Amino acid sequence: MKEQLKALENLARQLETTPEQRTTLNNAIANYADQFISSLSKRNAYDLQEDEGKAISDLKIDTTARSLETILVAYQKNVDSVGINPASGRHFGYIPGGGLFHTAIGDYMAAIGNRYAGMYFPSPGAVRIENEVIRWLCSLIGYQEEKAFGVLLSGGSLANLAAITAARDDKNIRSQEVERSVVYLTQQVHHCVLKALRIAGLGEVIVRQIPMDAYFKMRPDALAEQIERDKSAQLNPFLVVASAGSTDVGVIDPLAAIAEVAQAHELWFHVDAAYGGAFLLAEVQNEDGSTVKEAFKGIEQADSVTIDPHKGFFVSYGLGALLVKDINTLYKTNYYQASYLQDAEHINEANPSDLSPELTKHFRGLRMWLPLQLLGTQPFVAALSEKILLTRYFYEQVQQLGFEVGNYPELSVMIYRYMPEEGDANSYNEKLVQQIWQDGRFFVSTTTIEGVYWLRLAVVSFRTHLKEIEDYLQFLQLLTNQV
Ligand SMILES: *Cc1c(COP(=O)(O)O)cnc(C)c1O
Image (cartoon, rainbow, N blue to C red; front, side):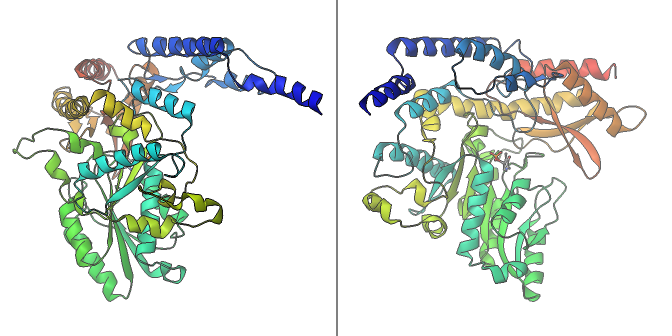
């Protein structure tokens, strides 16, 4: 027995590293990261590779070890050089991420110590860090209530799902009531809200798409009328979802007016600010003297708010926050007592695991807390203000090149399309996008609104500055003189 144990131990000990091995691994990864980041200005934002990095699947997981060198060569070729490059400052498609280096360091620290961030008892410090991030976000949106709190999840889709389950339980939507219960949103709502309804067992609710104004914003008067009609028809209105920074065109619904309607009819009011929420930090004046921050007025009245730090706070993918006005609404859905957790009941801070479906989870607060600590908020304020102004600059300049534009950019997303002198504008612009993709230096995505095909510009990467925008304008000029 002892001999067998010794033999196993010898093999099992390979799981631990020696100081030399750690140095080698650390250096190799630090080198790779350095080369990656310093080559970004020369790298494409989009790599259309014919084999789509298929060779990475040739590295089959086997009984024996493989060298990091082999792995990094394959990774560089088949992962980091294929598809969209989210780290590029020339990525203007969807909602770009970025990925702060400081977040990578935070993740590294979190993984090394492997602190248990699901509950306060095993790791009070980790939970305090998570909860500090939540309190900071609550103060950013202007929650005054002492009961305001939240939870850090992996992204906006999960945060919206957690909001919808809380709304469902707070409004007591039991299975018998689902078919006569009503949710209000617009055609511009992010599709993950509809997905979340289905996952939350609310697939059969009545979904009302409220008419929008000319800027694709929900019309509060139309919302109020629809709720009244539904009430007279003995239906059960219970939830309204507004967008603060719609994904498609980047506009903010009139939150204060919607909040008023929601309160008058006792509906749960959820604001999806996954993309837009970070811009509460921006210090930008509009032409009429109002500020960008003022456009969010009413968000502090929402029962729940989603903010994705992996968008506007530039942290790497994997962080979405749900904030609620009353923490008890999250307890109602997620709290559970289990006898094997009885030691963990003594708490000074809310347990993340009582507020979401997760128990054991990534210590994800550190990836946001560390960058904010190391940098302070000032560079974030500057970067977010810069993103808005860059978009507005593009909005002015692209029109000089013969492009038609949509809304004046409230935040940092806008739509535009070239108007050819003859021929179909939709097919012209589809061809234009193909050329942009083929070239690869810039990545853009598109949308179709009421049958019209638009290119989108989303300026969210912390690496996008004036040069990237001017280079793109120059490229568009070249293309439209050719297409
Ligand atoms: C990105 C986005 C989502 C989805 O968030 P994920 O983090 O991708 O899950 C939801 N709503 C809006 C408005 C978004 O921009």
